[in-house]
Length: 46
Image (cartoon, rainbow, N blue to C red; front, top):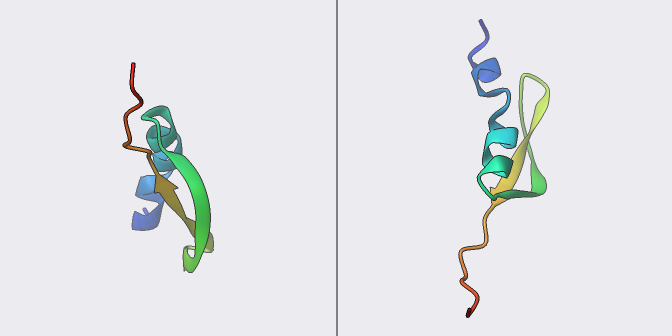
């Protein structure tokens, strides 16, 4: 098994945890682009 395939579904896992995809990098792993995920940690006043 190609080790880069062990991370299939990671984007969906991060998205489910509140992260959003904000871009891609020039790097690739097995011809798949690497993405940048971010989560807003600021709190809004209630």
